[in-house]
Length: 233
Image 1: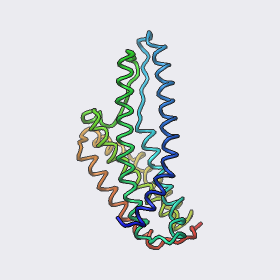
Image 2: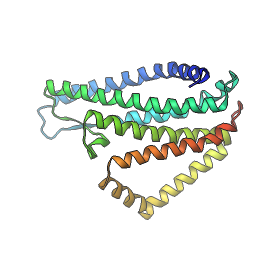
Image 3: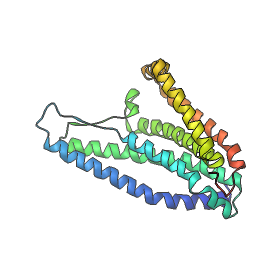
Image 4: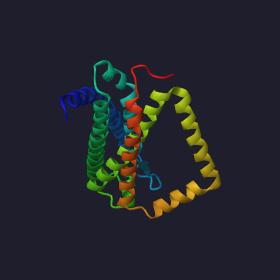
């Protein structure tokens, strides 16, 4: 990793840390509010609250990946950065960010579960994709890291397409994907496929997502090579 990549990595990390602090502050606040509600309703046997941290963390990494292109490519080029170095920095960042968020998220869930057990709050239930395998601290980190890298790579590629081709190219691709998805839902093959996947899911399934994410990153390199300071509208 050369000095240019390190400098851009540090610059973007400092910028993201601010938003990350806000994100986890809000997330912890929601957990505390949910804990108060559950504690007050402990006497109601039929009341249970389900909470899925991945819905929040997966959304966060998707937004961050999109901002990698939207907010930093033009700045890097203006500062004289080489396109290849910008691309490598962004791939390194997505990999590191996925692992860090996975560790923080799994640790937050573990601490929250300990506290709820100490206060005998039994009507609050966490849900995580790792329950399809073995739900523990390590498994949650591995699953989250693999899935989040896939999400970041997908949104990163979409952001590059929008930046390079503008609303016409990006919007056309997005519209085509929506049409294919709706057709698959109405025809039933998407639903059948998802049911087959979830009924036979293994760690290999999540590793496959990670490999597909690497493919998305590779597909993004040609767009990065032709990218300019002026964003296509």
